[in-house]
Image (cartoon, rainbow, N blue to C red; front, side, top):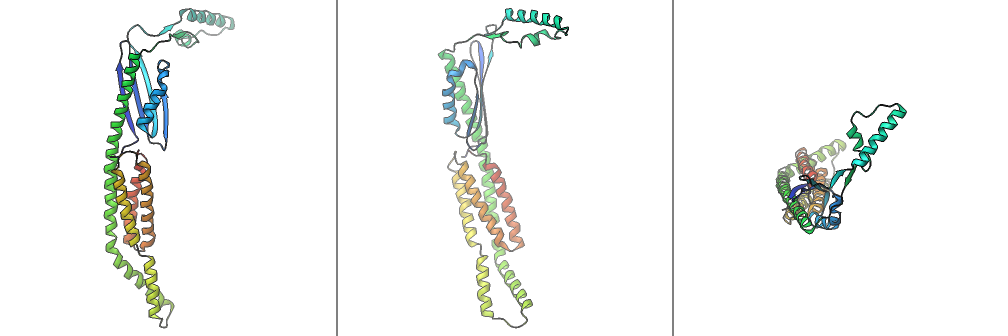
Length: 290
């Protein structure tokens, strides 16, 4: 089963004094594009986290974040009352000297000043690291499950579209005999309009056969059938087939285009347009396959 590059995973680990939420979002991308947002307390885990993500995700635009929410009164962030008071007195003094209005919301101004909010350095013990590591692994598993579900839907879509193209390809056969006769009749009609006298019918037959052979589409039909079968077989190989499926879709497009240029028949051209429409939907979605 193929896998989508779009995915999402979110897990919250409950620790004695805080909640740690791990979140991973992925979108389609030609390469692995990894962005991480990790609190300072877990920075030493950065390389380990990146290694886990690289091994599991392989390709796509990845947005990874860890958020912490402290529980209870024991939080590592404190208000520096001395700094706050000093700023308060200085602002009042400057306002009086310059004759400008005092702030309407003191706290909004003061809490933004440097060193007013201080954060104590916290040590992360092994138990917490293990809990965060488990949360990361669980979030990755959720992401993989999400990608697999999306991949299953894409595979069903691709299978249906490939079957539609194959069915339309068989419809071309009913026009092929009629098409040759119409081309031959048109050539004769044009020839008789140009030449009032008799013409060499043997030479005409030879030229007609040569012209019609150039319009023969059996080779294109055979190659297109092979490409359609190869696309289905490649999907069965599972994840990591996105780029290959994209290449096969391009080859399918080339054969359909050649069929259109050789068709010389309104009915066949209509079928070719319908096949192109089916293929375009495949091309749009194959960009999202891992």
